Image (cartoon, rainbow, N blue to C red; front, top):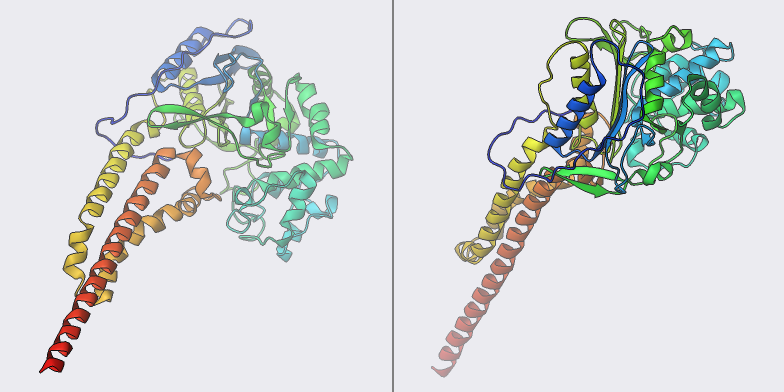
Length: 498
């Protein structure tokens, strides 16, 4: 989902007002050698000053020690963020759900390579191949389910895990189970519902007792919908180097991206990832197939230095998150920021650069690509509107040159103006194609507002020009017909007098 857009030129709009980061943080254990608490603070505050990020919570650990847990800046309600502030971790939740399932496997209550329907008979799809989907394939995102067949984010949101599973009955698979990694949130909704059926408990209660509490994460929970998130998910989006408060639309999130946690609890989570717990280690992989890079709730890979690396990102429309675990050095980094996806790639950028600091490299000073791209789009938007105004003003002259010609020739000249309109209406589908995820036009107002405004401006300009030209063309053709009629009448009257 991370796009890198090459752009330059001068900024048209004033740079966004910088929101000063707060310093709220609880006392932590002495920082180990290497990345220090003061280095974390210095980096985060510099990043926020450069980018205008309103707020974030950060956790950095090494081995079984906390380097830093803190909140910086404020939430959308203006309240200062601290290490105890609850924040939605979005799709980082998948790694928590995966651990919940592997705990059941560890206890012998679930076999990871058994078909899902052994434990969840209600799981049915229109594709008969779904009967072969295993529990492991759900967690490794290789079930064959995909947004191309079931665009869940573009559909009406269910209210419970049971409803989320029931809604899959009419869906097909994009491929055979185990064939290919296809990132799809419903994999984890099904896994969470499986937990409920096997344990006879609601998912939130099971996760509290089996995962969160044993790890000391007493401030962490999981919810069904975005309406249950802190502040109902209200956060920020970026546009033209400014941040704008936005409410979050209602989405179903449990199992796949519904966990709410704090910096303090995320530190405990990171420490567990670098521990020796067999169930935790099982989620790290290796993936079931050698060509897959998704373990169970974790992307597997290598650092620039060739060391193992585990990671997962998360995006809501108004928040984003990232976690990185470096098993070789024992470092763990987690960041949750209150800006939306794409327009605010803040959590991933910060986590990446904190990991670079942990490994002794100098961060490059990255910032969300929209901070560079948006001023360019602002210029292009004004150019589109100016051309639209010019086209409207010249529409009478344009119509005058074509009033006596066949209508089809005018239609041919007007046809290209349909392209910007089609581009605007198809923007959601285009984003969905690029992200390999379902998207709607409304989501673009969160993901990249400046791009939405640019396409809307081009569309408005085109529609205005076409409408003005057609109005003048119709008037001129009617006037010509009237004059021709008068001429014929006059000629007839002259002949009658003769």
